[in-house]
Image 1 (cartoon, rainbow, N blue to C red):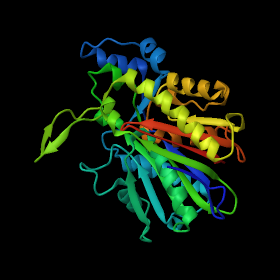
Image 2 (image 1 turned 30 degrees about the vertical axis):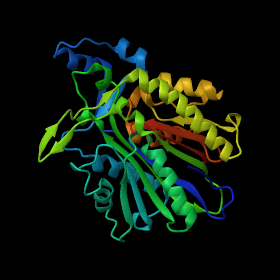
Image 3 (image 1 turned 45 degrees about the vertical axis):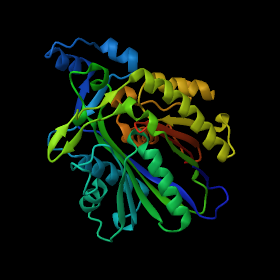
Image 4 (image 1 turned 60 degrees about the vertical axis):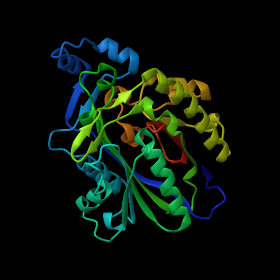
Length: 335
């Protein structure tokens, strides 16, 4: 589904952003040392050359996904210049909820931790690495309908808890973190166009296949990925969805000031930028310091770029993500 906001009288606009990374920063050298204890060989050069990742952050044992989300949300609310009580909808994108089974939703836990008692709606979105882009599209449509006026959108993950540290092809890629944005109703255009897609026939190339049966685990509880298949499909669908939202927004790649892609792998990001004809200099890249933080990666990168002075008001941003499901989504935003 593609939705353009150019013909409506109510627009949705990003009012503020925030992010949080756990204190435990794990360098490639440190993770190499961890794997060596199990006789698994890797190196900083091997990891960086294949992914562009130099480090990632892992949550402490007592840190839950909602704790990471809380700290990112507080910063976004402060940046938006509003009180938490003004939020009338919370959407939290995650594949690593606080509770087994996914309920109560981590969004509801976050609502409580923020001290919001106004009865605002709160729910989780599960679209893996596309989760933030999905959530942005949902929030945009709710705001334009007039149903909600201020929406807190959060991408938060503790992926370190579903990694198999005997599989160097996956455990070196992912990290934990959270990013948040407050989106509010505006008389001026902000989110110009969004698109969401999925194709469940590709679900096996990136998944956590385990299930529980009366408390017993059936299959693996760890993330599994066919890296080559993911790369091939990701570059293809990211180009397609980018062209889709640009057309809906009546823009071209030349109009985009910053491409802010899901921070999965530097090769995928560079491949997508090349297909679109966007210079590498106009791509926000944080994967080297964050690793792949799934649903948190786009809002983390966005907040990092805003606070660094790269992204400025009035600029056009293209944000896009692809993840297990298989899901993919994008948004064009005038920040």
